[in-house]
Amino acid sequence: MRVGVSERFQATLCAIPFCKQRTPVSQHARVLTPEEYVFSEEPYYEPVGDEVAIFEAAYKNRLPVLLKGPTGCGKTRFMEHMAWRLQRPLLTVSCHDDLTASDLVGRFLIRGGETLWVDGPLARAVRNGSICYLDEVVEARKDTTVVIHPLGDDRRVLPMEKIGELLVAPPEFCLAMSYNPGYQSVLKDLKQSTRQRFVALEFDYPDAALEQKILQKESGIDAQTARQLVKFAQMTRNLKGQGLDEGASTRLLVHAAKLMTAGIPPVAACRSSIAQALTDDPDMLSAVNELSTSLF
Ligand SMILES: Nc1ncnc2c1ncn2[C@@H]1O[C@H](COP(=O)(O)OP(=O)(O)OP(=O)(O)O)[C@@H](O)[C@H]1O
Ligand SMILES: [Mg+2]
Figure 1 (cartoon, protein in one colour):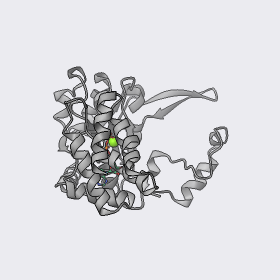
Figure 2 (cartoon, helix red, strand yellow; figure 1 turned 60 degrees about the vertical axis):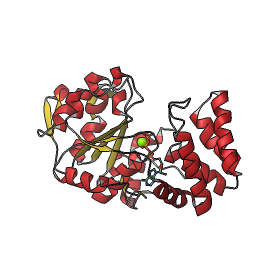
Figure 3 (cartoon, protein in one colour; figure 1 turned 180 degrees about the horizontal axis):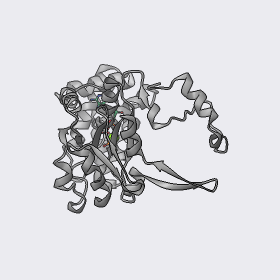
């Protein structure tokens, strides 16, 4: 279990009255408030370069951080690892094109005949001194993205216009965001005035030896099979722009390795977890499947 929750917190949750009216919670499910989302165990992360040192230096200097890189290359895992290192709660907001400034900052809600102010995740993170991670930030509307501007420069404040407050971020607060360059249209690119507030870290798939190590650690697969999977991934990455939008990510390799360790034959594992995830095009599918048959 990667997220630690204190006994005290579990007791608090049960005491919240409206929790009782919700769908009953399975004994294996856990409900966390963002402030309690602190990692008690180290999330496994293999550094690829100097990203850990740069993030730590940025954090110390209260600079926001932008993670760029293709899907499944370790950005989220890196954030989890950094949150653990810095022992701060990690609050992730998945951005989409309906996300409004109120979704981030907060809104008035009517509950039991009373009007209550409810902080949005960004305001909660600022108050609590958490790390706020805006995932896929280019998906958010531009008028939403600008609310982070005063937080992202040296003012480090969040104006809460609806309640007439200015929330000043404590030193522990950190703003981070990620995006996958290249997937979106020019219209969806980040504004210069947004991106130039951030220290940017570029992520990519790890080199072969490191990726093999990650696969072994994540799935328990043997070295030889892990090596072959990495080779397979590199072949699919060479097909990028030649029928495939993207090659197999480290995430897909981990999926394949997990299926294999569960007893699925390698070719079937690669077909289900990699080829089918990469494309629907019948010709590309058979080309990718042929690559895996040639290796396993
Ligand atoms: N450097 C790394 N160390 C450890 N595990 C890694 C690393 N890079 C990738 N992984 C593995 O790859 C998986 C996918 O990584 P992650 O979810 O962090 O990708 P992402 O870059 O956030 O992708 P997306 O942009 O789609 O959200 C992880 O769950 C982990 O198993
Ligand atoms: Mg991610």
